[in-house]
Image (cartoon, rainbow, N blue to C red; front, side, top):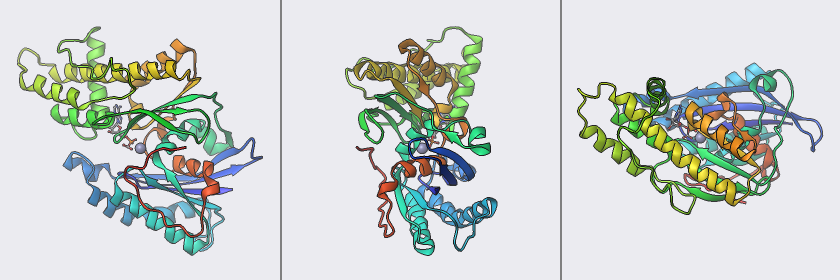
Length: 359
Ligand code: KG4
Ligand code: ZN
């Protein structure tokens, strides 16, 4: 079985062709082709993703990328040997989501192939099940096994969620951010530190420089919002405001390394909040596996602390491979695979910017 995944929820136009072979109980997965086209250079001058610009770029790029993918995988563009199409329905930027949906619906009609609506966050969860990219490209890989109940921590530019997963396909959001998402907080604080967009990688680079230089941080004591609250929710906008005031009141001549130091203190504060709530959730739901997903997972410090947390509880922590941490279409094809019974030849998918995970 071959599934073509289409992802346009934010600023990446992505297509992937995933092949699934073998018996249903022990499927094997192979990446036949994949393309991720980042629009980051278009959005960077604006300091964030501009929805109308993202839409225009997706519309322009989708047909070009599809042509390339079909050529690379030796598929006939008139009648390819593809069994299912899977497209991101949400969450994401609606103008961007619509471009992928409209494109996928046209392909369904043209090729007579059924279409599956995929949830982007489910994509980030299932991405952790895929083995190394090398395995997926050179041979048929089996999915990583996991024990239930599982807990997923999803941290991206648009989301911060803790999800209780009693079994596959059953998702209960037990905690989320009350305001900014983690990646959004990284990006906003980066702007305050006059760093380029996207801010996450830059903050993390500066923070690690400071950690190499000083064992302990704590010069400015940034807050840890909601750290002790009894729920599993997060809040990051107060932390961002605290950074704003710290910079405003700062004597830069006595703190020449202020950017590195603030970056480190901010990363420490965010990480502490993420770890504390994840730890509480693992205990409360006796989770037997921790799954982590979303672009912020590229952050080495957060990754290390989550690995330590897994060791503390003696449970495995599943991270997606580096290539699958950020937005991609392979995770959408895989989410499609899990939802293939919902495929339809007459789709009328409505983009949902706030689409939630559900059972
Ligand atoms: O999942 P993703 O690629 O797109 C969304 O669906 O949002 O996540 C992008 C987010 C951006 O906010 C970016 O700043 C953040 O992930 N990010 C990081 C790092 N690399 C990317 N945040 C912290 N540390 C990083 N190293
Ligand atoms: Zn994402």
